[in-house]
Image (cartoon, rainbow, N blue to C red; front, side):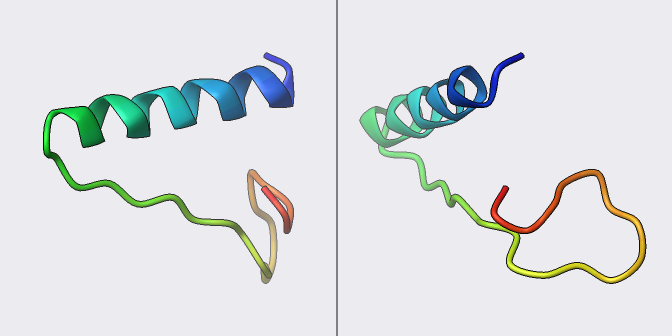
Length: 42
């Protein structure tokens, strides 16, 4: 999946949760130690 598509799906889900008065959070990876699935900025 392309990064912009993944980002779009995440924000669509956050909007859906907000419409239902549910709480949600979005985080950004700013640093890692060792191996990780995502790199900083993800």
